[in-house]
Length: 398
Ligand SMILES: Cc1cc2nc3c(=O)[nH]c(=O)nc-3n(C[C@H](O)[C@H](O)[C@H](O)COP(=O)(O)OP(=O)(O)OC[C@H]3O[C@@H](n4cnc5c(N)ncnc54)[C@H](O)[C@@H]3O)c2cc1C
Image (cartoon, rainbow, N blue to C red; front, side, top):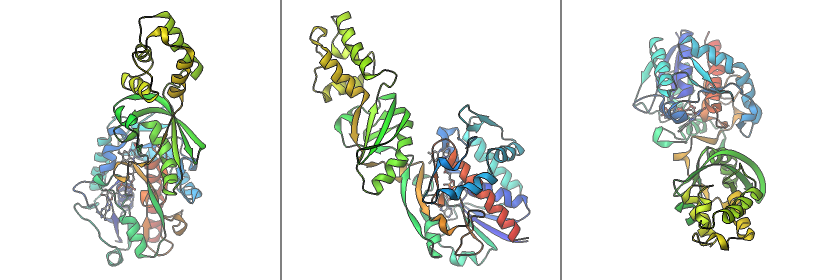
């Protein structure tokens, strides 16, 4: 029986191990951590956004954007759902296409995948960090590198996949943190730490508008977090890597136009003469944000209604709808969910994930220069790349 080694017991490695063992191959999986699937366990805030019903190459960033197409077509949502159903894992598919385990717990996914692989006879080696693979390869008929990316180092994130690829002369696309918080050097931002709004973030690169995202915006003691920020971070992080000027404009109250906000402030001042300016603003925004907007604009929060005029109201409304900050940096790989860049996919066969430089050596999942948007797309590529790799390993070992 042919013997296959998988390095890395994350999403792609575990799935690959199951598929190969199902085909009767002898599979040994090496995981550096004491347990497998650490990123699955924390994914989707512990719920695991396991895939997306609307998978397409447009949801991925890469130097070679067409690379994902074959794998995603071969193993899309329907195939994945069929597989997970076959091991007893049912999915809850949301209206926007995001899929979660019906149990709503990432633990279910990690447990079922590991148990199922064990039942099939996959040989698990925990605490097994592989340092280099040239010699290692000689012991196996095929080696699959599923070591992930640098993102979230506390969960096992590293650049080992790139180092292994370099042993065989592969090129590397410079890595950058993705789906990550953004750092802003502004005392006023740091003072608002903990305050959150449902807003809009517009990214500017070299003063040109790039994209607008909607969702949570959370102020922190280093800058900004929240879904709207993570969603612009993928483009922002790459632009920072390339030394561009990057800034963000926040709309903290997108439900109202700037004109409506100004009119509201002005009207309230007339309606309740005993109110201060701060009293009026806390009807619109969290107290911390209201206080700091006034401090930023150098307007007294105690200003009384009778002194508030439309000019002041417009100034405040402009700040609420379009507060601009320069982005200094991302919050780094440790805090990133995923990493952009990685092994150059021009040197990998998209139909098999086999190295074009070394026969029987495969790279799958996040080791490659492929990164998906938020929404289950990163797991979707982990599953799809593992699937096409498995097909190739099985057929070349028949
Ligand atoms: C906080 C967080 C939340 C996320 N939420 C989602 C989500 O909801 N939906 C989604 O689609 N994606 C999500 N992701 C991204 C997703 O987890 C990854 O894209 C996915 O896990 C990549 O799978 P992988 O198999 O390539 O790598 P990983 O899952 O990272 O697995 C790599 C494994 O290889 C091991 N390893 C590394 N080097 C070695 C070595 N030399 N020897 C032995 N073992 C090694 C690591 O310890 C690790 O277990 C999230 C990530 C994080 C950090």
